[in-house]
Length: 135
Ligand code: THU
Image (cartoon, rainbow, N blue to C red; front, side, top):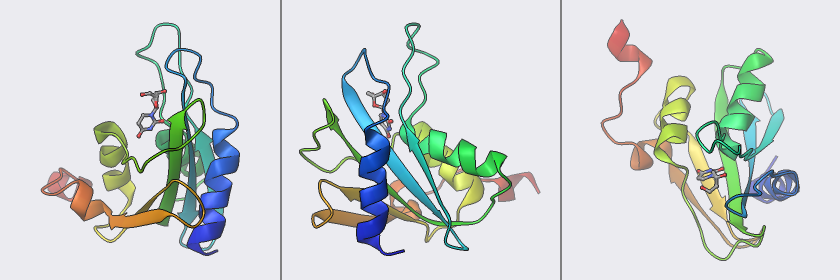
């Protein structure tokens, strides 16, 4: 599974986004250490607060299937499902990533399969609070 393939799966997942309030559709494709991919989309709610981001949808699907080890996630998103620029996962999703992933976990943010940037979790969540602190 290379970056291009993972981005392709994130685009496919974005098609499933339920975003009637913001119109901002997001897709994510999460790669496990053993090469399996779990996808997710954002799921909004009329009460706004229960809205779930695409990244967390992918993580919660994977973890609920028994996965614990991840190497990368590709994210794509844009108003009406048309990505125009890179975006980086929200703070809540970064914290969820920090629960299961190490500093080198890769976040690939893309506008197309050929136009993407890859950053580490550590760069997006420096000095993060993680499970190691609880002993
Ligand atoms: N959203 C995500 O799915 N992931 C992020 O990292 C940022 C925001 C969603 C939540 C909401 O449905 C919409 O984008 C606008 O905030």
